[in-house]
Amino acid sequence: MQKKLGVNIDHVATLRQARGGEIPNLCQAACEAVQGGAEGITVHLREDRRHIQDHDLSDLKRILRVPLNLEMALHWDIIRIALKVRPEKVCIVPEKRQELTTEGGLDATLKFHKLKEIIPEFRSKKVEVSLFIDPDLKQVETAATLRVPAIEIHTGSYADATGSRKKKELERIRQASREAASLGLKVHAGHGINYKNIKPLKKISEISEFNIGYSIICRAVFVGLRQAVLEMREKIEEKS
Ligand code: PXP
Image (tube, rainbow, N blue to C red; front, top):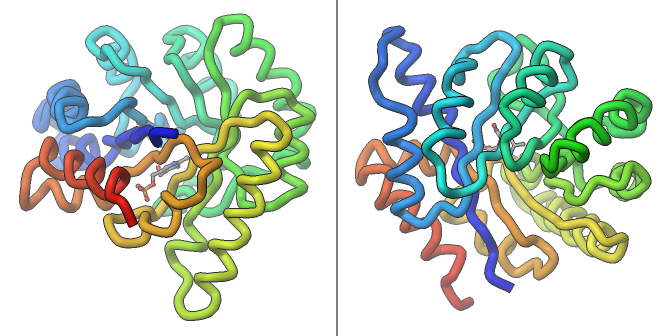
């Protein structure tokens, strides 16, 4: 199965917000990523609006010819915006105001009742919901109980681990992916994935999609966004 690549362009907006103007243009960045081989564009509308702004969602929705994936926390004001904009996909993530980036996966068991209330709303608007969870079998089973079509496995612990711990984290991802697929869930993966650590992940056959941001945007500083995405696509397709 050909694995898809979704490119997270939050940090293009981080750069724009640094001066509060209109450059770099987010839609142009999205188009460059698509030209490089992105099969989806991902953005995270945070409660504090530190990078992506409300208008970015409607702007992207208007111009994109590939699916828009909105990462969002379970906050009512964000949920309302998402239901109005209707991106093709939403990925429900935990969010803390002070964090630099999304730390850890959503506790779907703890948030079960709220998720049970929200998910049908998105389903009725034909928005595909995925839950951003740690590679934990209990979380996978909860996601299946909630009847979401997909999960995104948080790969941050794997990305950060060193030595023998890295192998253990990879095994957790492998097992969670297998369990999810056996329960009929699509498996996506994201967080901290770069041009090097993607190699063992791409061998996990159940993973059908990667969502990658930071490493691609960092590479883009030197080679341009289109080329940086192209190189990641090549890494995904590379035999070995
Ligand atoms: N997937 C989800 C759900 C995320 O929250 C993030 C970070 O915004 C990513 C993927 C991309 O992570 P990174 O920027 O580390 O590649």
